[in-house]
Amino acid sequence: MVKLHNTNNLTATKVYLIDKKELESHPDNKLFSTLNFKAKYNQKCFLADKNQVYIGLDLENKTTSDPFYKLDFYELGATLGNIIEPTKILDLQLEKITTDYDNKSIVDFTLGFSQAIWKFTKFKEKKEEEINKSHRIFTAGSISKKLSQDDIEIFEALQSSIILTRETVDDTPENINPESIINIIQSNLQDYSNIDIKVFNDNELADHKMNSIRYVGRASRFEPTMVHVSYKPKSEVKNKICLVGKGVTYDSGGLDVKTSGHMKTMKCDMAGAATVFGVMSAIAKIGLEHTEVHWISPFVENMVSGEAYKADDIINSYSGQTIEVFNTDAEGRLTLADALSYATTLDPDYIIDFATLTGMCLYAVSEYYTAIMGNDTKLSTSLINSFQNEGEYAVLVDMPEVLREAIEGDISDVINTSKIKMAGHITAGLFLSNFIDQTKFRNPDLKIDNPKTYSWAHLDIAGSSYNEGSNKIGAKGSTGHNVRSMFRWLLENDR
Image (cartoon, rainbow, N blue to C red; front, side):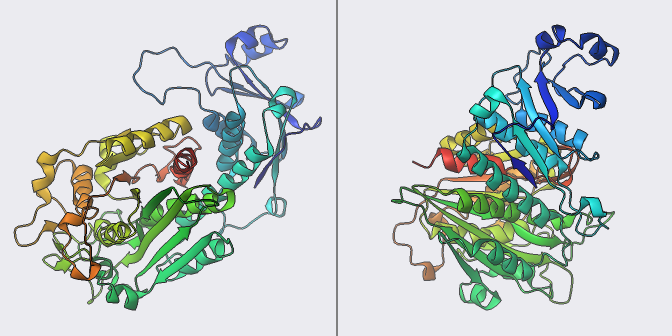
């Protein structure tokens, strides 16, 4: 873990974020020239004999429409982290920044540093010097004056919460399964007075007719579960938000089994739930004044056995809508169908789901990006603004109604894949949209007197949440991408 201090430390390794103008007047300019350090953005220079690290700030002047092409303190901090992690240096001091910055810049920089040096080492032999290894970042002069105790608390909350997300995803599917994850959630959140945790076991899911969840999970030796975590704000409730996370703790593909190595890394198929886990952890630590937040995640393993659900099955979902199974490897949307429908019964202002939903998303927007879809332009726009402010890559994706017929069933209401091979990330989003629209519900047990369609956003995080280095911190595995942006969105809308 990293500790952030708004005091100085004379013996710490000094860190300078400098631009070309500063470089030209620097007394070591000739040395930098010899080392070919030109202060280009994210370029690094470590002068070990002087105990100094320099990182460049000059972005190449480009004509671009890319809103993410800008100076990013989180990325700069990660660059420092990747320099320092292999060394024995523990104390660093942010000495000088030769560009505009504020308190958030310092928090972002330190967060980037902390996430770059963090590694999942649970199953590796630990050397003695690595046990309890802790880094400290100090701030000098005018930099320290911008940093408040509240900023330090936000840093500490986000640091631990993003790591919670990452280690939950990176751990093995034997350790993280539909039953054990409940204990992990309870041990991390149950001691907060503003948090309430409700757990649905398989019998309770059956009582609620959450058949879509149960079908997917019935081939596993671990019974399916669902968690509903509620956060109560400090003052009067003015907003109610439901966050839904896909929680497939392992995806073999089911009877449509994954082949050619595609099953490897499918422990990450619960990254949506892990993302919301991290967000709820941060919110519990920092608190919100007027926003009630609900987290709903179903947890299943999609496995193969004589109990497995099959293509050609027709599932009567919690909403009462029927779903014909075309492919058992399109399982996540089935579990989300029941979870989203359940979220509508809480009558929230917004429903936002996070899911490693489609491989097509990677091909459409790359591993770097989260794809944001939904039925409410205002909500989607506010989310993309938060992602841009945090520097977490995301892109808005339209859901054209012309594609809706591709997920309509001939002998059921909908099908769980698509009749077309193109735009699979979009047709998956269109599928989900049926389950936040109560006008389509047919389950009389829900007793919905005035059905309505809820404002909803769907975030496909299939690439951004887990990849092999296609991220700003250089992580190989879980990235923690999306936690910061969702946390900041909740803070910004807490009024």
